[in-house]
Length: 633
Image (tube, rainbow, N blue to C red):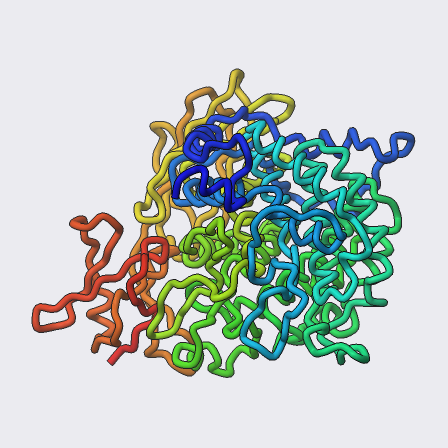
């Protein structure tokens, strides 16, 4: 398609050359200044209440996230997906993104339709198979959030200008008309709230702060009295009006409160905490997730973590930790969960049943976004490496393998763990993951490293650079690795003056006999399932080598089907490229050999009569059929 046709379709902002932008973004993603993204500078400089100090959270966790600009990704699938996804957002014009807002406000609305959920289509029919017009403009706030985060990562002025233009355009549309007769008012407001917060925090856009206040003023009459969970539809309304997700609101309201939004955001956060039916049962160890919509209730757990951090509620921390364990106990080998978008009871055999019954195994971009947030909260609070292990497993086996977001609204939604699996786009344009995938791609920066008072914790092994202040001194670390298909990661410390601090390395539970070597010192064996700590006076150029021995192992889908297994290599599930289940023994599968004769990491298994079965990580599957699990004979 030619450039004029692209512009005619409304899919490319004026003045943006896609090829040049993509090239520049790729460079900036690794070459941006090693200063922080200035989140906390912006917070300290908040202009909304200059005469008063901002509220302080009750809890300061042992670990803190690095700002977006403090981490740069090197060549890796993480960086590739980040660049591709942000480039796609830059192809969608302001007019197209703003079209449903302008239409509902009664304003001129040029630009092409995104279609699907996003379109302002008055004749949506919940009884049909067509979701066109279900939630007009629903993911605009997520797109705005991702563009603001991408600016914080790259410092590319085009991203800052794009955010400013979208904020300006959105501000002109704010009207009660948007929420009248809307099926997803709290969902959309929640995403708008986060998008405007991120535009304010990460690009310094003051108009975003004003738009946030006006948006909240406008939506107030349309908010329910409390967190509603698919309760009976109001009189004269069909069942689709009960699908809204008000129980996810508190997390971002707490953030708005901490940014200086005032007590009304704190009051709203408390108002929409789903305590009676959700958080308090979870705090007692009850499985309040069973039967719930999977992604949205996992997303709601971020509110429980914020309730602990902001107000010190130990009951809500217990709810979040118990919920994480409940989810882990009903997860696939990939780390994904929620077949047919529903949590179930552990021990029921539902996961095994789903391998035959559904292709909707895990809401991948949405689910991974919620999962990463919860795991980061709990890792920061507890310091337990199991949360970092979970981030790694979900990342490599689900969202990194998602089909690329398309500028026409096509989006990969479900990971398919059926015995006859295939990667496909969602049948409807712009479902909810059209917004979460860009946010996930930005948040890889947040998942990689964490800072403590005494040093830096390495959570992900990926080509990258990080910088932080240690006792008033700027310290940088460079990581080089081919992990997870290779077992070694190498680090170089950069510091102008000798500095005493601790480097901690996550050692996965499968990495028996892992080792760490500093410079030419003797190699030390470290325990699996821990953070291995190396504390010393570091000099410029000091090197660390971490080796994580990797071998093949099997994981059963559930206790009811011990012979239905996934083949694992380190954090990777190896997916069998096959349409039919081959006859295999445990011994044959564990004898899989790595092949160097292909353009992607491939393991082969001899299945008799000279035939071979190929297995590859999820990232490298294209359009061929595959099976996540194999049946042992």
